[in-house]
Length: 44
Ligand SMILES: [Zn+2]
Image 1 (tube, protein in one colour):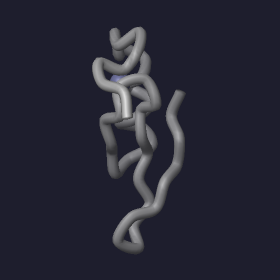
Image 2: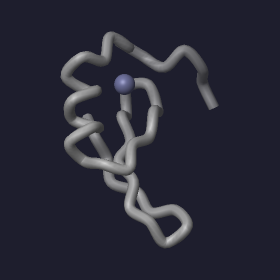
Image 3: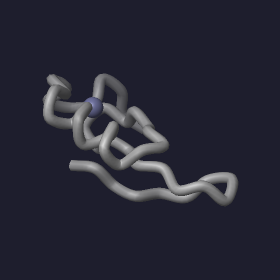
């Protein structure tokens, strides 16, 4: 899912599946709909 996060006084939206960040909620949701990352390829 898409999570809201703040960085540098800006609001970003992050795809929880792959960690990609977007400055637009629409872009994030659009990406998420097409995100094929079933799980992160890295673990922290
Ligand atoms: Zn993604």
